[in-house]
Image 1: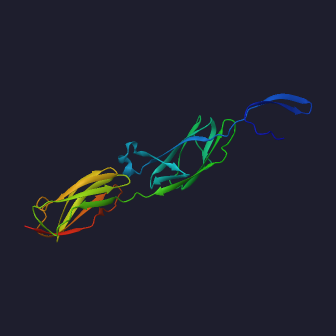
Image 2: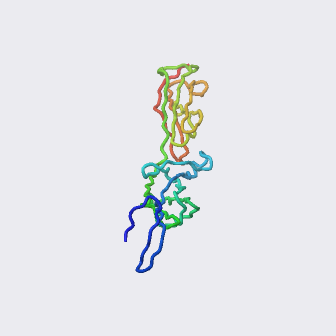
Amino acid sequence: FEIPRLIDPVDATLRIGDAISKIRLVPKLRPELTELAASVRLPDYLKHRVSGGTMPVEYAQGVIAVVEGGTLTLRMKASAELRRASLDEQLLVVQGDQFSAEVPLAADRFELDWTDQDGLRAATPMRVSVRRVPDQRPTLLVDSDVIPSRVLVSQSLRFALDVRDDFAVRRVGLEWASGSQRGERVLGSGGRNALLSAVFQATSLSAPTGDVTLRFWAEDDFPGRERVYSESVLMTVLS
């Protein structure tokens, strides 16, 4: 037999042969997720950049973006007390109406399912895709007034640097070269954005007279990654 869809509780009579019983039917909604919080435990080389080495990430339209090498953790709350929950059919620890899951590093998609204390399952399992995002190289923009082709050893040339990284700028500096001679100076560091001023003066940097090439560089925390360089500026230093 079929029971019509109910909105409110209703008393009913159940008849089986000569047996009659009064029952009360109480409609109940299937359990739904009411909260979902996603966080990523950063790779070892980035952990010092964030308190606890973990940062929140967004869940949008079924997709969560995670930096490559990071471990994704989900914490969820349902609309009812739960009996069980699972990730790709692997049982998870449930505490009342809440459960959490650590997503395997190799997973690019997974499925969450849950059942409440009355045995009602979610209307449909929750399917989530994981987008592994590479740690990008920093970007470096250099602004300055018109650079003369010839400068005196005591003359100062001023530059403004705008350096950005998806996590943190480790170091920013300038580098000069003249023939076999080279020199550099660290200008500073920053968080995701670093706005720095720089001054080139041949005397203070021990740069020789003659043709000198100047460029700026930036580094991030990615292990073994080469510096990002600006375009070179060529000038002749006069005594």
